[in-house]
Amino acid sequence: MAPRQAAPSLGAHFLARSPSMPTPITRLERDALPSFSDALTPPIAHLFARGDAELLGQPALAIVGSRRASIQGMSDARWFAKALAEAGFVVVSGLALGIDGAAHEGALAAGGGRTIAVLAHGLDTIYPSAHQRLAQDILDAGGLLLSEYEGGVPPRPFQFLHRNRIIAALSQAVCLLEAAEGSGSISTALSALEQGSDVFVVPGSIHSGLHAGGHRLIRQGAGLVQSPQELMQDLGCAPSSALQRPRAATDPLGLGTTAQGGSAQSAFPGLEDQRARTVFAQLRFEPVDAQSLANMNGSSLGDTLAGLLMCELAGLATRHPDGSWSRLRRD
Image (tube, rainbow, N blue to C red; front, side):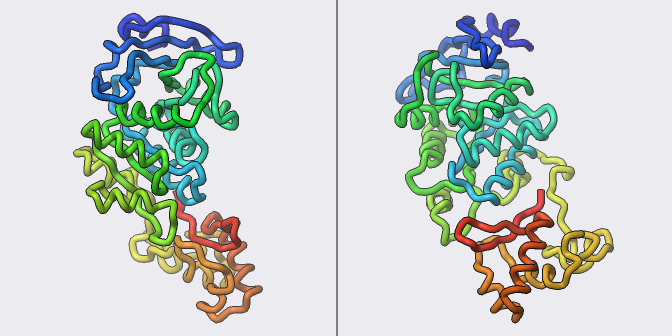
């Protein structure tokens, strides 16, 4: 349903169009938002919407996490969001850099997937500016931009915390990826718990501060999930087997015979070189420096670096800013 057609059924009022984003802004009154608790603090009087407000009545899950996400975290966020969108969920997030943006991208990649971006400022602008194109892509795909702030209100720090309670209120459950202690993502999870919604955490390294907040929530009773399939099962859904990531049945490292009976070379065409296969056998998802890898496999540092480069070119490894390396999951 087009936004102008949907407006009367939602108690919406058209307010404005922006030259840079022609989809009109509407105001949704409180009585049109039954999923919002009267106990929300501060309370919600109305919301401003740009896009298809009918999405507010559909099953939705939130995916949130760090703005300074790792490459693997971004990949996992896209994977979760794409699978959830393919299963019929609306993916909700905050359009921030990092995990939020990756979640929106994953939902859009589902083909017909819908996503809601909840903003901490007026809808006449987009913050961060780097996500202006993503915001337009969300609208073009039939998604929704949402805010409690009228046009002209700039982003302020406290407004992001207030925004997080809306993300939680819209969602049946909240899934955290890479959430540090005291982060905005943790505030979203706590708001979800206060509203009686489920919280799930994708775990990570015990040595990474990016996962400390999420791990604490797991200790306090949040669900631990390692795939979107587990998340949907915990919610009582029946995910399609087609949503499973392809895995080799007898060779989880991808180095020997694959589930289809092929060789490691055919499974990973970038790893024909023995140096790459040797390095990949030692590489894990936790970052490690090249010298340590060389020591583990008894190779020279030069051969190890050459193998790492081949793994990176094959999309199987990533180099971190501090010079360390880790394995990269394949979508």
